[in-house]
Image (cartoon, rainbow, N blue to C red; front, side):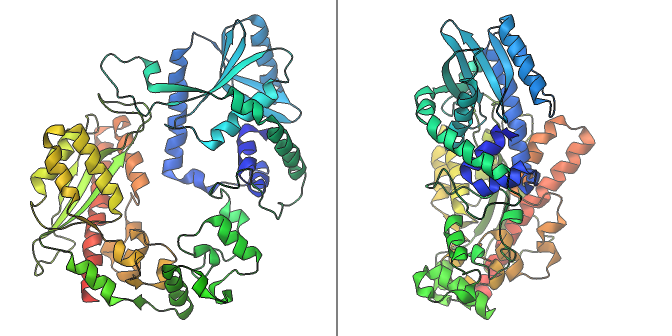
Length: 495
């Protein structure tokens, strides 16, 4: 059965479609952020129903597509103005429609998304819906819409549900794309009958760099090795695949590395020779810009589709935690037992004012602020400044002192083969500080920012004992982020 979901996958890549159609597991579903987005989608879908008059809900009956189709046609015949989850089966294609609204001139179709912007896959989504429903003699279509969250709306005391949403009419776009939809379906039907996946990775979005959903099944053996062409830094997947198709699967098979960027050349040479490459001038330039006291700073944030607090926007990034390690001078050592300054918000309250004031009250008035991937921290501070205009000048002044600890690595000052084409702190830290059990994220219950974000949102549904345990886990994770920065900077000094 071709469903909306695997059709959208087929629009991205026909090879991935084969894996999805044949029920291969998509490992990304285990990602806490992916799970959170699915949950958010369900919340938004239920919230949208408040906008429409009371309607008939078509239940989901797993694998009984014909029954759901018949229930929908029966509902249409019985005359309700609104149908939720209307289901249609046509020539081996099955779709479910979030909202159908009957008007004097025909039915309007609404696809509901929890994102704050219209994406290319949303157009594919409504395109296949129109293709199927338009062939149903039982009803006449008028317009088709995607409903997204309105990123410009801030929650107010006197809000109504519809204030959170924006309706985007795509009727003309969808109609103009029906031939493409039909051709894609014909191709996907042929692929669905194949015993093995097609060799060609054909996409209906050749200008897009969609991430592969089935790397563990689709990509060749060895693609996760350090010397694999698929580990090349800052290269689109489609370019890596093009190299692979030319027979270049590992770095040793690259004939002329001068065709690659400077940092890619460093990566290739370091990996082939299995040794670190150091440019002390780049490291010295970075260190020379640092002044004491050094503040090692890290934020954690969450977002939610339907705002909980006044003047909060849908999907707005909300900082709820920071860790701050302070090194007074070059003779100051920070160890595993050294106290850090930490802030973790009350999960039931708006965290923004409290975290902004705590930051200003605790961070030194001078010296360098070291972060990792500084654009994130700087954007968080900008958001806090906008929310707290009376202290915005002091907050924005912090951004003038921020430097990015990732820079000396991404600029080629130090490369280790174990980086495997990534300069994330999760790759740099273990390469520089091998065997230090205090610097191992695997020892934590919360291991990354996505887990931290989801965990904080889960606090409101927990009892007091569970809350206390999870809050301690959050503190341990954020503590390690700033302690890790100190350890990395200390290593650069020794180099």
